[in-house]
Image (tube, rainbow, N blue to C red; front, side):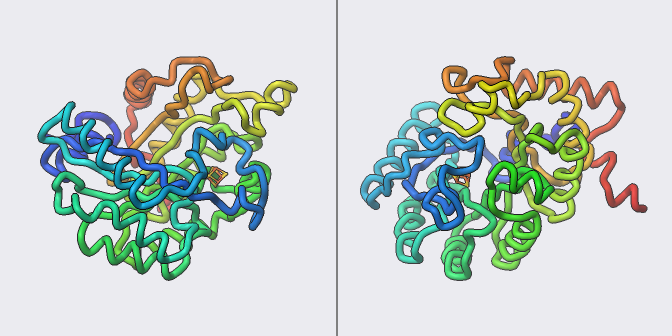
Amino acid sequence: MSDPAPFRSLRPWLLERFGRPVHRVALDAGSTCPNRDGSKGFGGCVYCDVEGSGTGALKTGAELEEQLAAGIRRVARRDAEGGVIAYFQSYSNTYVERARLREVLGVVEPYLGGDPVVAVSVATRPDTLPPEALEELARLAERTEVWIELGLEAADDRVLDDIKRYHTVDDFRWAVERCHDAGLSVIGHAILGLPGDGREGARRTADVLAETGVAGVKVHNLMVLRRTQLEKQWREGALEVLDADTYVQWLADFVERLAPEQVLHRVTGDAPIEERLAPRWDLHKNAIRERLVAELARRGTRQGSTRASSHRG
Ligand code: SF4
């Protein structure tokens, strides 16, 4: 069944791709990242909540196996026919020795071939993909679909510096190219409303995601979470976040500029309200989705309508 929405949303695409509903099982391998261990910085990106991003405590193979097995049992209780995406979510999962990455990825082996794992998704940073990590991921990609989730966040090096990402837009471009060369699919992450980025920044970020040809996109509005560096700025009144109307406007601009075939995995954040200081408006994905549909209908546009390349003609 084709997707009637004016953008390519995840659920219908998954159904089309795998022929059955698919559910994500989030896994915490307990990795760290170069913005936390001092190799690039300490304290992390300004919006990153250390606990929310995972424990940071290295998990043994057995612990990881148990996380995955428990997640698979949970999915089976909800949907006996459902497939599973094993999602290594926390921190930079490829920022480890080759042997460790092999151990981590190895936990999915017994479940490959759709029984029930249909894909493996690995979150990491554009600057933590050494050749040996790509080789390990490419090896896994011979047996199942592998998605690499890479943070671009904003397509402006100055903004990336300000939020202490410590990588560049070109690092992102290069990482996507190398993933594609290795046969890996990429999901690019973006944040709208970062300090100093503005509406033009939202458009620019979509343009870069479209130009790099990533298969999927996750986007959300900037949120101020407890225990982050942004919390202090926000409490001092030095930071504003987008209201819901503005976010939907910028999101519509963003979606219009993506390529029509790129799958929108997410259009909002999912931080629990008790962890989220701002904004306080309803972030539920269905609420934002409906407002986005209405805004695109009002404009008479859809995903891909105003791609930068079509402007350049
Ligand atoms: S957002 Fe990712 S890269 Fe940034 S500090 Fe958190 S785990 Fe590290």
